[in-house]
Every structure is written in structure tokens, then in C-alpha cells.
Length: 160
Length: 107
Image (cartoon, each protein chain N blue to C red):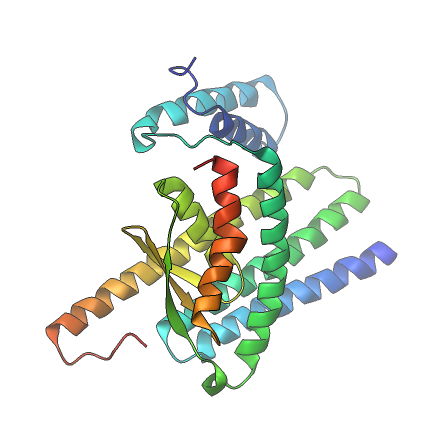
């Protein structure tokens, strides 16, 4: 089973996406979708030495909700900062020490950070996530916020 | 009628956020600050436009609904990756300049 389907979730995602994007339902598209869903994870298997396992689906849903809500807040906040006088902004580089060791989960955290309030992840290097924040009043608090709001739930989702 | 008004409002909202994102890109003073505009404002901008599109399709009986959701998914996956690659390149470039001496600091 592990050899045919190294990553069941990824396969399911590819299958679903292809069928959704197909212009018309039909056996042909189903066959292509199946081929891709089985083939792509197999071809790219050497990029995934330890495929991440979804350990807690409920935590994943809750994290998704938090992130979506934060994206909306982030947009309004950044929109306001962009319109206001740029001299008032205090941008800063933040170093977030990571407890996550899995590279895939770490880059997932980086993506979440990039999508949410006033922060863009710059680099993940030796267990430290370098983040650029558009406006920081308290650096330590901003780091703690990223760790408690996104990293802790992510570790629960993937049990790592 | 009500659906049309909501769709129009969402389109306006999405358009404004996309505009603000571009505005930030043009206006903010340095590269890392500029990154913030497009990575954020565009996600909600395009997000609102996609919700408008979903509503419009939902009320006018053609079936393209799930396709819009796929677009959202691709957008949410690719936007941070692009930002990450751009900023990584900028950081490398800056470090290279600093190590040559006489470069500006990171801020």
C-alpha cells in the first residue's frame, strides 16, 4: 500500500482538483486524474523523505479558520498602513526560533506567516524563521504571537 | 436583484484591495516593506472577487462553482511561495553587498 500510495491525501487532492478543473465530466478525465493522482506522488517521492501525516483533522480545521479570519484582518490593517504616512511605520526583522523540525511543516508555517497580519517570512534557516514585519511595536510579543497562534496548533495538526 | 447588489459590492471591495496592494508596492520605501502590499492585499482582493464570482454563478445556474474554489486554493498556495523566493533573493543580494563592505544595513 505504501508503495502504490505514498501520499494518500496528496493523491486525493490531485484527483479532486483535476476533476474540478476539467471542463466536462467524463471517463477520459477520470482516467487522467487517476493517472496523475497515482503518478505524481510516486515521481516526486524522493522529495518527501518523511511525508507528513495529518494527525489531528479537527485542529487543522480550527487553524484554517483562525488563518482565514486573520487574513481578512491583515488586509484591512495593511491597507490602512499603506495609505497612512510611511514614516510612521516601524518595520523590523524578527527571528522566530522554531520548535518544528519537519521542513514541510516549517515551510507551511512560513506560508501562514506570509499570509497573515503585516508579516512576510523571509528565510527558514537552521531552526530559525526570519520574518519581516511591516510595523512592530513590541518585537518579543510579535514573536510570541506567531509561536502561540500558528506554530503550536500546527504542531498539534501534524503531531511533531 | 439583491444578489446583484452584493456581487457588485464584493467586486468593488476586491478591486479596492487589489488597488491598495499595488499602491503599497509603489509607495513603500524599501523592498521588504513593498512585499507586504501585494502578498496580502491581493489575497483578499482576489478572494472577494472570487466570492462575487461564486455568488454570481450560484444565482445564474451554470456550474463553475468548485473551479473558483480551486483558484482560491492555488492563490493561497502560490502567493507566499513567490514572496518567500523574492525575499530570499533580496536578502542574499543584500548580504553579498554588505560583505563587500560599504553596504547599507538590513533596515
